Length: 146
Image (cartoon, rainbow, N blue to C red; front, side, top):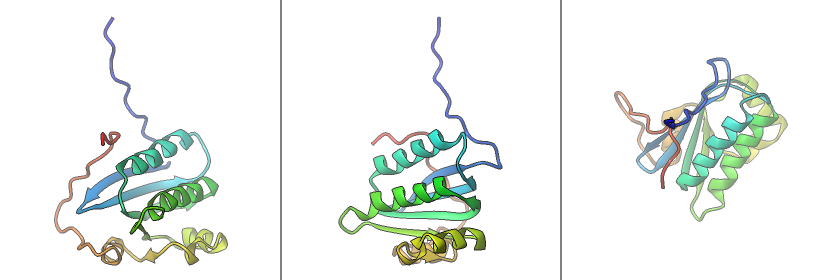
């Protein structure tokens, strides 16, 4: 009997999705959908583990396509943030947050701790990296092997 590799379960378009791109020493987390409690909790933990395994000292979480955030999304942001800033020189920036997401960040006071930028280019500038031009190859839907 042949054994086939198990494919990672990707949430539907209305649910949580995180794609990790490595760009000039920056881990860019392209986040999409609803960051709320639900069946994607294991998926989100896997993505958080992937970020930790990559051991990037500069992380940018792009929330431009995040439609809502709840306690699970807050836990994801805090987990990613703390895993980065614990390292010497570690920096984390959150970009492209909607007014609804900003409201949650303000209520939790995370907006006073985590640097926010309006867009990807501004976030990369904060991290000291120039924004990509043209098509960008995303590097990881598969777990990192480091």
